[in-house]
Image 1: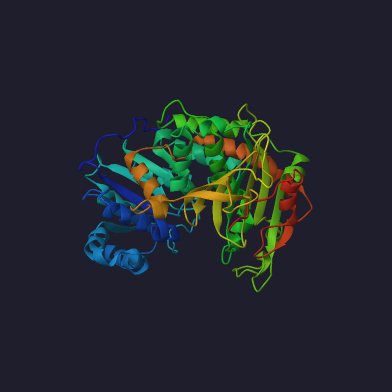
Image 2: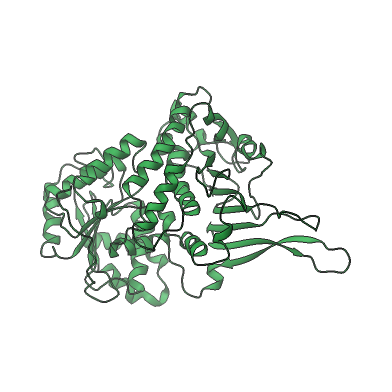
Length: 511
């Protein structure tokens, strides 16, 4: 047990429908904070979900005053503020505070953003700022490298800042393999109980992901055919047009498998393949997701060559290759071996999905930016019309969230019946007049409410690494380099052969 065994903080907020807490952000002046966290909190405030007492406390080694930090936020985020809400924006800026702390003194971390010596006075300043609010929820958000998670939690505990109503949020990636993930979980778990730990994956906050569960479990027509009798295969794609300029140092040690598959794509797979939970509560959904990961057929040994593909983009059409991207250091051997693209044929070994392949694909420098789940149904048992095509359900996560069900329809006109696939479309932006919140808004709201449903549990993270690690180890032992593919294309030839061997193709419609 951790030193703070307690029940989740479900007590009502000071103001009905709002959240009162101190949100302490490590790396609070960094890119994630400025691009995602601060805008999400502003919109939550504008929608009335934060109480007047709610505070955001940014930690960094920047030596900023509160006024300096508010000025930085104003300069970097103001363009997201509607013209008619300047008063609300000023109110939100008043919630922001900054404390200079050398949060990297035990880690060698640059998470604080600036160099500096040990600043024990900074911890005292944070303690004074939090003093008198011990009964208020405290959320410590670690927007920092995973190697810092354990040391930061120890720092908080040693400073006496962790209370029974505290929570900690961990950004991905959680480690770089199973042993490192277990070590981080052990270190954080020595300070916080499992119900206090929120491992975040922003994909799970997207409206389409939420609608996937509603689509399956709140509509009678779909669930009876959500199985191997009616579904031919499933494709899960996360494609990006950008490369890795300035990020090669990170990507050399991460690669597409760690960066995207182990978390984002496997999370989408679990939600697609999970059994209906007995109830909609905090643990039932996570229980079913873990069962899917445990049912994944291991890919080991020579099967890695058969069921996985890795590639690296090379220069084409004026776009640089991975090795030519701007970086502070020249390419290394690790640079030449890292994958910027991967495709995997996975199988879930249970009664519902026996024989149904799940194709996972992600890549940099592809011709379009798109994240989607494509459920390909089987052909009708006996078609009386020529030219038909299987039905297909497409759940689009980005760039425009929505759902399309592709059905066969007759083209208008006299004479012979001609079929044409047409989509029945649900665009969230066009259908609903309310603003669609960003993923971080939903997830931060759930953190403040103490609701862990959309966050990864320890056994879930470790089950994902158990499946990923044999693939990583096999790739690392191979002499072959990743298969090259021209920047701006849909990936290496091997990815198309992965599906082509069974007569299938990747879904590229409207690319």
